Image 1: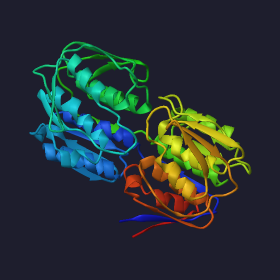
Image 2: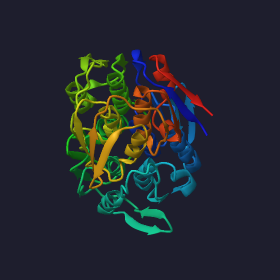
Image 3: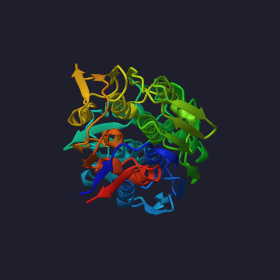
Length: 417
């Protein structure tokens, strides 16, 4: 099994280009189920999660071709409505095939999904939303089954904003008869990206990016070519790494409007940011100032950046209070940072007090989830000595060639067996 080895203490310098967003690509690829024809997606990152959903679609009968970061999916051959456990268990986003399958074929059977161990993340809002659209839902032996001769438009209210729930029900509603309104919908850029793609395919959607999304159902969609937006979390990860190593890095191919919360917090740490139309230059300050963080739904500070900032706060001047308000069980990486000498205490399960020290010490550590792996890479970059990170398959789910990109910035980092 692969590991990542880092000899820390080097300042990052140079340029790095951000890949397409995993969290945008996955629902886009799932939307190809709605189309009887070839959908083409460009700027798709080469990741384990992308390979997983491609295998899932191929098992359903779709024909897929992935070449040069372009994925072509022909959904005309889909002849199966069951997403099996062996294909779904590795990735929570597999639930995104539920809405499109029942919308197009009137029947879907999807195994309960797996993914990162960062909390329960129940799918009850997906299911209640499909029921509101007229689907009959049953659960048996770990599978969700949804049936509907014809989905009927309706108003759906989310108790809390849910990204995959909003995406799933938006895809279901585009082929429903009549009008649907999603209230308290998620507002992430990935939602807007999916809505724009569906509109290109012939859907009638308004309000994406706000808390109220209106959808007028259509009889069918047509193929389109869709470009995946840049990965805002990858951009944020490199921004934090640049500041934490007191480096100077130009991050290209990003959308600054998508990462306002990250930009504001980095500025508060003392980093200097020069923001362009599709790039950001980050220069770390000699002194890293401690900041407090509370994760919130978009456009607030993203939960997917909490672990990376925690790694940076371990060497900040002063104390930092981090409140994880989105997911339970998302401080597992703190135990690994403690192994590197960090001073962190957890209270009530979702509060972490980080007391800054002069420098981390290298140690063997283990990644517990996707973003935890990124935090350990940052910790390894700023630590004294050689850090070895195991279970990096988590990182391969969401970062395209991350060790190569850091190496191009001057980091002493390599993948080892």
